Image (spheres, rainbow, N blue to C red):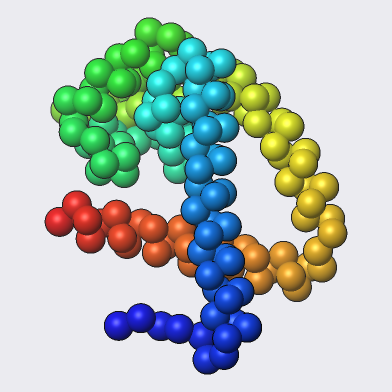
Amino acid sequence: MDVKPQDEQADALADRIVLAMTDLAGAMGRLNDLIAQQAGVGPTDLLCLHTLNREGASTAGALSARLGRTTGAVTHMIDRLEKAGFVRRRPHPEDRRSVMVEAVPEALGKIASLYEGLDSRSRRLMSEFTTEQLETICAFLDGTRDNAVAESDRLTR
């Protein structure tokens, strides 16, 4: 069942937003690929580092589920990132059979520095909006992320 706005103007605006989201995804994908290249890691490795930065230390199994990759692929990725100095393994505090993977703060700083231009431009753009508008944008982005996660989960069943 499609949910469509009630009038033509709203429908046209919804179409523009959906197209803008697709264009944004492509632009961010290109930017992330370039940043991964400059950091000397692969695109999935960069996504792993983003995940560890946002969510903290994780097991390989949890990273596998979060990234949609096999445990074998995640283990190889962790090996690469550890060898390059981006992550380290430490014993799991509650399960002696398991290890936790955590990002090295200095390595995260290196990655963050590659996003400084986007951060600056984004903050400049955000200064053009009211607090109420920014709250609406944030709610839309959070909901869109939740929708993307739900759709990814649906497609992997």
